[in-house]
Structures are given as structure tokens and as C-alpha cells.
Amino acid sequence: MTDAPLFQRVTLIGLGLIGSSLARGIQQLGLAGELVATDASPEVRARAAEIKLADRIADDNASAVKASDLIISCVPVGRAGDVAQSIAPHLKPGAIISDVGSVKASVLAAMSEHLPDNVHFIPGHPVAGTENSGPDSGFAELFMNRWCILTPPDGADEAAVEKLSALWSALGANVEIMGVAHHDLVLAVTSHLPHLIAYTIVGTADELEDVTHSEVLKFSAGGFRDFTRIAASDPTMWRDVFLTNKDAVLEMLGAFQEDLSKLTRAIRRGDGETLFEHFTRTRAIRRGIVSIGQDEAAADFGRKHAALKKKDS
Amino acid sequence: MTDAPLFQRVTLIGLGLIGSSLARGIQQLGLAGELVATDASPEVRARAAEIKLADRIADDNASAVKASDLIISCVPVGRAGDVAQSIAPHLKPGAIISDVGSVKASVLAAMSEHLPDNVHFIPGHPVAGTENSGPDSGFAELFMNRWCILTPPDGADEAAVEKLSALWSALGANVEIMGVAHHDLVLAVTSHLPHLIAYTIVGTADELEDVTHSEVLKFSAGGFRDFTRIAASDPTMWRDVFLTNKDAVLEMLGAFQEDLSKLTRAIRRGDGETLFEHFTRTRAIRRGIVSIGQDEAAADFGRKHAALKKKDS
Image 1 (cartoon, chains in turn red, purple):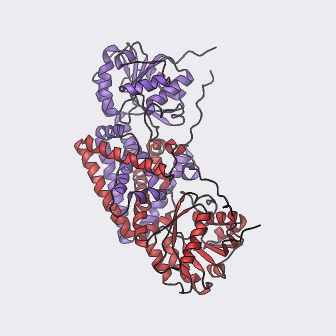
Image 2: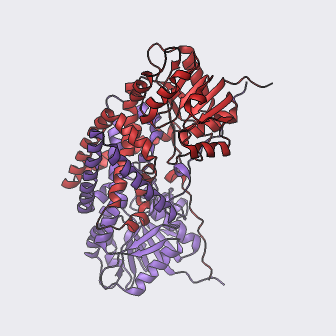
Image 3: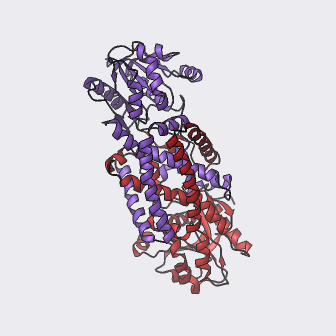
């Protein structure tokens, strides 16, 4: 006996890392009676058709959302308003509209403006990803054991929230409900500030006069290479994040600057005690993350090392 | 026929991550006729004896270096001078003395002061490591395909440099010769600054008023968790690095601060073009590091994901 799918028709708009991961997961588990997908780029649509990311690849947003029960916008947050505008006249009454953007207040405002009253708009954000982007980069397991935050507006339909939660749970995610403002503050520190810092330091290393580009690459295993992964993330997505979550990011930057000044002063003054105390405290946080299963316990992210061999003599 | 070992007797002083990795590699490849090791901590010495990290575990530095052909100090850089002082009267003439510290100018000064003229002092630094420390954390493959920088002083004996290079090459490392000042500048950007930034941001996240500790851990997969690995590194080692490479670190911090100001201003002004241009440039650097084999090509450092499964119905 086959279970009834969770939704009769699901539409994904945008087939980058998150959209194409959703597509693969939904197909693999049969969560949609029919999966429709589209993307603003003709090349991406062609590729999506080639690798069969959905039952049907639509040429535009309007035709993609027709008669759909769940529509998830997976575009950079700066384009959320445009997506809402393009789909608003074509939505089935009672449909659930969601998104996966890393910023929630601006998405809520930009999309609500256009969406009709007879649909359920429930913004969402799966806290998961890799540094890759595009329709080939997604994989069905991306959301396993990660958190997906939903930020339903006041008075949101509980049944709709439940149904959307069920989709994310089926994909392996833990669902958390949060207000948009708090989401944007939490993510500013756990995601946006780290990306900004990584983008900064990688740029700094690339522009030095006394250290060559080649030296930066060769000796990157001293720590720098870790930052380059994050700083290889999609430029459009991250530009939009910083432009739309400006206030929370600037607030976190202020806190970071204070702490950096404190440590800089300790270095300048040769205050080893302050440094040691700080470094001991941060060590514990890593253990906390590993213990709740949000990162691997293996040393060095489990990076592999070639086997050691005796040289031929 | 067995090859003659590279050195008759090798002594390792300090059995943390690097020392215990060297011990394992040297034993596995038979690079020393006899391997002697010691550590300032009685607990570490006892553990080292238990897990057989060397042919002999000596109780103190003086007895450990007796009749040794190669002595490698693997202690935090702040203790390099003390180690040199303790071994100086007991060294075999012609012995090679080296170290593995992340800072080279201060180590060269601190150790040279004590070492006699009839030994060859060649400071070294394998650019490799994990966030773990202690005698159980080492592994023989740690140096495979990583760089080991040697900083022989002017007039250093070429044969001694060759012999030390041969040891590192045997362990899988690529050897690079560099001056101490340049080493300290290069490592300030590829290792010391990234660690300082990571230690800072992890501390910042831990002290916020509006975001709970638990939220920081739960949503750390948004980027933050990457920083926690580096910020879990050995506090003593890193305190010493910042105290002994103060000038180069402060210089790199200055460059970083300028770039952070530039990006902060772009965010404040809503200047998406500057952000996009910067983020596109940094993306290329990741590709460079992966292409020269200094990091894995796999997305997200190859972190594993549990398989997606249909729920039992």
C-alpha cells in the first residue's frame, strides 16, 4: 500500500543548492503527487529538465504555481518580492506559500505586500547548506539533522504550519518556530557575521603586498583554508543577506569589534592571562556543538590524510 | 635488506599533537635507530610509555637528549628558550636541533642564546594540525601533503639542513626554506590572524544577551560551527603564538580592520555592487586552495549526512 503524498502538487521556484536539494528529497520520498519546478535562468531550467529535478519544469512562475498546494520560493532574498508579485494572481485559494531565505523580516514584508489573503504565507529557513550552488549541487540529505526555522505571522493557520512542518520533518530536519525579528538576530550571529568575517579575511589575504598569493594558498592549512570554504559561498545570495539584514548584522559587528579590541589590546600589552582565559572558554563551545550533533566529532572536520608509506629504496 | 635509519638516535621533547604525530611517523617508517621522547608532564610521560610512543621515555630533557643526533622541541613557543637552556650542556657535538613552533623569530632568538656553537640549530614549522592536543591526538599521517617550513640561520650547515629535510619529506611533507621574518609574516596571515578572528567571534557569540547559548549551538550550521573548530585549539600554544608574533599579527589585524571597515560601510550604505564584487573575488581563492591539494574538493569539507529514509507508516 502506498501512502498518500503529503501534498498533491508542490512547486519550487529557484533551483540552486536549496531548491534542487528540496526537489531531490521530495522526489525521493514521494512527498508530492506532482512536483513542478522553475527557475529564472533558461540554462538552469534546461539542466533541471535534463537531470529530472521535477515531474515538470515550467517556463515561468505563473504557470509553475497553477493549482499548486505548496509553493516554496528558493531564490536569493532580494528577489522574494518579485516572486510574490509574479505568482500572486495565479495562486490556488488555500495554498501554502513559503520560502527558504536566510533573512525573514524583509522577506515577510516584501512577499506579504503582494500575496492575496486567501493563501497561507509561512516563511521558512532551513539552516543548512554548502559552499556550492546551482542545480547540480543539491542533494536529498542536506537537511538531515539540521534545523528548519519557520516564522509564521501572527494568526497564521495552524494546520498549514503543521503541514509545512511535516514536509521539513520528513526531509530529516528539526522544526523550530520563531518570530522574524528574533530569527534575524540569531542568524546574524550564527551565520551572517561568520560569513562577513570570512569574506573579509580571505579578501585581506589576497591583497597583501609582502605575502604572495601563492604563499597564502600553500600555507593555508594553518587555519586560513577553513575560512575560504565559507567565503566561496554564492555572491548574489550573500549580497542580498547583508543588504536585507543590515541592522542585525551591524549590531553583531559592533559586539565583535568590541571583543576584537579587547583581544588586540591583550596582545599589544603582552597580557597572556586574558588570552589564555578567552581561548579556554571558546574551546568548550566546540564541544557543545559536537555533543548536540551539529558537527562531526572527528578531528579537523574528518579531513582525510593519505597513508604514510616507506619510500622505495 | 633493511635500510639504515636516517638518524641513529632521535629525541622528541614535548608529546602533544605534533610531537606525538612525529613519534608515530618516525616509528612507523623506522626513521630512527632509537627514538627517545620526554614531556614536562608526568601524566603525559606515563601515557606515552603506556601507548609506546617511543623506544624510551626519559624523565627529563637532559637525559633525553644524551647522545642524540636529532632533537626536535615540540613545546609551546613560549617554552622554547627553557628547553634550549635545559638541553644545552648535554648535547652531542654535531647534533641537529630543531623545533616545530608556529613562530620562528622569537624561537630562533630564545634558543640560540643557549645552544652551543658545535651543534646545528635549524628551526622548523610543519604547517599542519588539528584542534586536538595531547599524546593521544597525534597520528602518523598528519604531515602528508602539508608544507614544512625550515628557517636555517645564515651560514647553517647544508648537510644538516638536507638531513632534516629528508626526515620531513619521508613523513610526507613538502619542505620550503624561508627566512624567519618572512615566515612570521606569512603565518600571521595564513594561521595566526584566522585563529584570532575565530577565537574572537566564538567568544562574541557566547556572550550575547539577546541570543541564548543554546540557540548559538543549535543554529551553528549556518557558518558559525566552522569557526568553533579553530577556536577549540590549544589555549597555551595559541597564547604563546600571539605573545611572540605580536608585531606581524598586529600588522595583519590592521589590514583586516581596513577591509572590514570597507565592507561594513558598503552594508551601511546598501552598496550591493561592492559586496558582490568582493564576494566573487574571494570565491576564486577557495578554488586555488583545492586545486593545489591543500583542502578537499568535497562540499562542506566532506561532512557526512545521514541517509534519507521514508518514515514507517
